[in-house]
Image 1: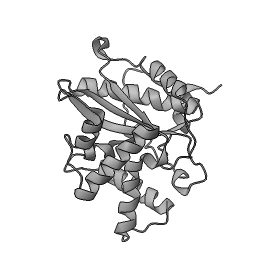
Image 2: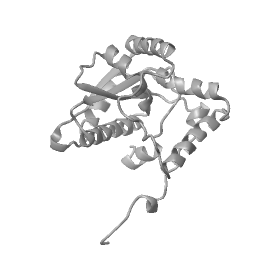
Image 3: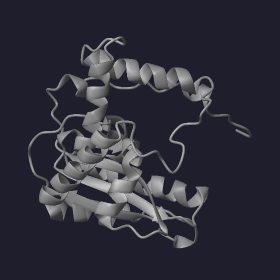
Length: 224
Protein backbone atom coordinates (compact mmCIF):
# COMPACT_ATOMS: atom_id res chain seq x y z
CA UNK A 1 0.00 0.00 0.00
CA UNK A 2 1.29 3.47 -0.86
CA UNK A 3 2.62 5.54 2.02
CA UNK A 4 2.01 9.26 2.51
CA UNK A 5 5.69 9.87 1.76
CA UNK A 6 5.40 8.00 -1.53
CA UNK A 7 2.32 10.01 -2.50
CA UNK A 8 4.14 13.26 -1.72
CA UNK A 9 7.19 12.24 -3.72
CA UNK A 10 5.29 11.00 -6.78
CA UNK A 11 2.67 13.76 -7.04
CA UNK A 12 3.23 16.17 -9.91
CA UNK A 13 1.16 18.53 -12.02
CA UNK A 14 0.04 16.48 -15.03
CA UNK A 15 -0.70 18.44 -18.19
CA UNK A 16 -1.94 15.67 -20.44
CA UNK A 17 -4.60 13.13 -19.51
CA UNK A 18 -5.96 9.96 -21.03
CA UNK A 19 -9.48 9.81 -22.43
CA UNK A 20 -10.52 7.53 -19.59
CA UNK A 21 -13.41 8.34 -17.23
CA UNK A 22 -13.16 8.59 -13.46
CA UNK A 23 -16.02 7.17 -11.44
CA UNK A 24 -18.12 9.62 -9.45
CA UNK A 25 -17.77 7.30 -6.45
CA UNK A 26 -13.99 7.71 -6.61
CA UNK A 27 -14.22 11.50 -6.65
CA UNK A 28 -16.69 11.46 -3.76
CA UNK A 29 -14.38 9.23 -1.74
CA UNK A 30 -11.42 11.54 -2.38
CA UNK A 31 -13.34 14.67 -1.39
CA UNK A 32 -14.84 13.05 1.70
CA UNK A 33 -11.41 12.04 2.98
CA UNK A 34 -9.81 15.35 1.93
CA UNK A 35 -12.31 17.18 4.13
CA UNK A 36 -10.38 15.86 7.14
CA UNK A 37 -7.99 18.76 6.44
CA UNK A 38 -7.52 21.11 9.41
CA UNK A 39 -9.20 24.51 9.52
CA UNK A 40 -9.20 27.05 12.34
CA UNK A 41 -12.37 26.74 14.39
CA UNK A 42 -13.33 23.85 12.08
CA UNK A 43 -14.80 26.39 9.65
CA UNK A 44 -14.17 24.11 6.66
CA UNK A 45 -14.28 27.10 4.29
CA UNK A 46 -13.94 25.18 1.04
CA UNK A 47 -16.56 24.71 -1.64
CA UNK A 48 -16.00 22.40 -4.60
CA UNK A 49 -17.96 22.20 -7.84
CA UNK A 50 -17.17 18.99 -9.73
CA UNK A 51 -17.71 18.93 -13.49
CA UNK A 52 -17.51 15.99 -15.89
CA UNK A 53 -19.18 14.88 -19.12
CA UNK A 54 -21.61 17.36 -20.66
CA UNK A 55 -21.25 19.78 -17.75
CA UNK A 56 -17.50 20.06 -18.32
CA UNK A 57 -17.95 20.27 -22.09
CA UNK A 58 -20.44 23.10 -21.61
CA UNK A 59 -18.01 25.07 -19.45
CA UNK A 60 -15.28 24.67 -22.05
CA UNK A 61 -17.57 26.04 -24.77
CA UNK A 62 -18.49 29.06 -22.67
CA UNK A 63 -14.88 29.77 -21.72
CA UNK A 64 -13.71 29.40 -25.33
CA UNK A 65 -16.31 31.96 -26.41
CA UNK A 66 -15.21 34.34 -23.65
CA UNK A 67 -11.54 34.05 -24.63
CA UNK A 68 -12.38 34.50 -28.31
CA UNK A 69 -14.03 37.82 -27.44
CA UNK A 70 -11.39 38.77 -24.85
CA UNK A 71 -8.07 37.02 -25.61
CA UNK A 72 -6.42 38.63 -22.58
CA UNK A 73 -9.01 37.10 -20.31
CA UNK A 74 -11.47 38.68 -17.90
CA UNK A 75 -8.92 39.88 -15.38
CA UNK A 76 -8.53 38.28 -11.98
CA UNK A 77 -10.00 39.21 -8.63
CA UNK A 78 -6.67 38.65 -6.93
CA UNK A 79 -3.01 38.73 -7.93
CA UNK A 80 -1.89 35.22 -8.81
CA UNK A 81 1.70 36.50 -8.50
CA UNK A 82 3.01 39.74 -6.97
CA UNK A 83 3.48 42.47 -9.57
CA UNK A 84 7.16 42.76 -8.66
CA UNK A 85 8.28 39.18 -8.08
CA UNK A 86 11.72 39.29 -6.47
CA UNK A 87 14.45 36.72 -6.15
CA UNK A 88 14.79 33.82 -5.74
CA UNK A 89 11.13 33.35 -6.66
CA UNK A 90 11.38 35.01 -10.07
CA UNK A 91 14.14 32.63 -11.14
CA UNK A 92 12.21 29.62 -9.87
CA UNK A 93 9.13 30.60 -11.87
CA UNK A 94 11.25 31.24 -14.98
CA UNK A 95 12.98 27.87 -14.68
CA UNK A 96 9.63 26.10 -14.32
CA UNK A 97 8.32 27.68 -17.50
CA UNK A 98 11.48 26.92 -19.43
CA UNK A 99 11.38 23.26 -18.38
CA UNK A 100 7.75 22.95 -19.41
CA UNK A 101 8.24 24.36 -22.91
CA UNK A 102 11.58 22.57 -23.40
CA UNK A 103 9.82 19.25 -22.80
CA UNK A 104 7.63 20.08 -25.80
CA UNK A 105 10.44 21.43 -27.94
CA UNK A 106 8.94 24.93 -27.92
CA UNK A 107 11.57 27.68 -28.04
CA UNK A 108 11.13 30.98 -26.22
CA UNK A 109 10.75 32.89 -29.48
CA UNK A 110 7.77 30.78 -30.58
CA UNK A 111 5.11 32.84 -28.82
CA UNK A 112 2.13 31.33 -30.71
CA UNK A 113 3.15 27.83 -29.63
CA UNK A 114 3.57 28.96 -26.04
CA UNK A 115 0.18 30.62 -26.01
CA UNK A 116 -1.33 27.53 -27.60
CA UNK A 117 0.03 25.36 -24.81
CA UNK A 118 -1.20 27.79 -22.15
CA UNK A 119 -4.66 27.73 -23.73
CA UNK A 120 -4.85 24.01 -22.95
CA UNK A 121 -5.41 25.04 -19.33
CA UNK A 122 -8.96 25.88 -20.34
CA UNK A 123 -9.44 22.40 -21.73
CA UNK A 124 -8.34 21.00 -18.34
CA UNK A 125 -5.54 19.37 -20.34
CA UNK A 126 -8.00 16.74 -21.51
CA UNK A 127 -8.84 15.52 -18.01
CA UNK A 128 -12.30 13.95 -17.62
CA UNK A 129 -12.97 15.73 -14.34
CA UNK A 130 -12.50 19.35 -13.29
CA UNK A 131 -12.76 20.51 -9.69
CA UNK A 132 -13.51 24.20 -9.16
CA UNK A 133 -12.72 25.70 -5.75
CA UNK A 134 -14.27 28.73 -4.10
CA UNK A 135 -14.71 30.18 -0.62
CA UNK A 136 -16.64 33.02 1.04
CA UNK A 137 -15.41 36.50 0.16
CA UNK A 138 -15.47 37.48 3.82
CA UNK A 139 -12.65 35.03 4.61
CA UNK A 140 -9.00 36.04 4.70
CA UNK A 141 -5.50 34.52 4.47
CA UNK A 142 -6.04 31.95 7.25
CA UNK A 143 -9.03 30.42 5.45
CA UNK A 144 -7.18 30.51 2.12
CA UNK A 145 -4.44 28.48 3.81
CA UNK A 146 -7.04 25.98 5.02
CA UNK A 147 -8.39 25.66 1.47
CA UNK A 148 -4.85 24.92 0.33
CA UNK A 149 -4.53 22.12 2.90
CA UNK A 150 -7.78 20.64 1.64
CA UNK A 151 -6.55 20.81 -1.97
CA UNK A 152 -3.26 19.14 -1.05
CA UNK A 153 -5.23 16.30 0.52
CA UNK A 154 -7.19 15.94 -2.71
CA UNK A 155 -4.01 15.69 -4.75
CA UNK A 156 -2.34 13.12 -2.50
CA UNK A 157 -5.47 10.99 -2.24
CA UNK A 158 -5.70 11.04 -6.03
CA UNK A 159 -2.14 9.74 -6.33
CA UNK A 160 -2.97 6.93 -3.92
CA UNK A 161 -5.74 5.86 -6.31
CA UNK A 162 -3.56 5.89 -9.40
CA UNK A 163 -4.88 9.26 -10.56
CA UNK A 164 -3.13 12.51 -11.40
CA UNK A 165 -4.04 16.16 -10.89
CA UNK A 166 -3.04 19.62 -11.98
CA UNK A 167 -3.99 22.58 -9.80
CA UNK A 168 -4.79 25.43 -12.22
CA UNK A 169 -4.83 29.04 -11.12
CA UNK A 170 -5.24 29.92 -14.81
CA UNK A 171 -9.00 29.48 -14.40
CA UNK A 172 -9.04 32.66 -12.31
CA UNK A 173 -8.56 34.57 -15.57
CA UNK A 174 -12.08 33.55 -16.62
CA UNK A 175 -13.70 33.86 -13.19
CA UNK A 176 -16.74 35.73 -14.52
CA UNK A 177 -17.66 32.98 -16.95
CA UNK A 178 -16.95 30.27 -14.39
CA UNK A 179 -19.10 32.07 -11.84
CA UNK A 180 -21.97 32.37 -14.32
CA UNK A 181 -21.80 28.73 -15.33
CA UNK A 182 -21.67 27.53 -11.73
CA UNK A 183 -24.21 30.06 -10.50
CA UNK A 184 -21.85 31.24 -7.77
CA UNK A 185 -23.46 33.76 -5.45
CA UNK A 186 -21.92 37.22 -5.04
CA UNK A 187 -20.61 36.31 -1.60
CA UNK A 188 -18.37 33.55 -2.97
CA UNK A 189 -14.92 34.09 -4.47
CA UNK A 190 -13.73 31.64 -7.12
CA UNK A 191 -10.10 30.61 -6.65
CA UNK A 192 -8.94 27.97 -9.11
CA UNK A 193 -9.56 24.72 -10.90
CA UNK A 194 -7.94 21.31 -10.64
CA UNK A 195 -7.80 18.79 -13.47
CA UNK A 196 -8.27 15.20 -12.32
CA UNK A 197 -7.87 11.97 -14.26
CA UNK A 198 -5.45 9.34 -15.48
CA UNK A 199 -2.19 10.88 -16.65
CA UNK A 200 -0.91 10.22 -20.15
CA UNK A 201 2.50 9.04 -18.95
CA UNK A 202 3.77 8.70 -22.52
CA UNK A 203 3.29 12.42 -23.25
CA UNK A 204 6.51 14.45 -23.11
CA UNK A 205 4.94 17.17 -21.00
CA UNK A 206 4.47 14.70 -18.16
CA UNK A 207 8.07 13.54 -18.24
CA UNK A 208 9.78 16.36 -16.35
CA UNK A 209 9.72 17.44 -12.70
CA UNK A 210 10.37 20.75 -11.00
CA UNK A 211 13.24 20.86 -8.53
CA UNK A 212 13.01 21.68 -4.83
CA UNK A 213 15.58 23.74 -2.97
CA UNK A 214 17.48 22.06 -0.12
CA UNK A 215 16.10 22.36 3.39
CA UNK A 216 18.86 24.80 4.35
CA UNK A 217 17.29 27.42 2.09
CA UNK A 218 13.86 27.46 3.71
CA UNK A 219 14.16 26.16 7.27
CA UNK A 220 16.00 27.14 10.43
CA UNK A 221 16.33 25.07 13.56
CA UNK A 222 16.75 26.26 17.15
CA UNK A 223 17.01 24.47 20.46
CA UNK A 224 17.99 21.04 19.13
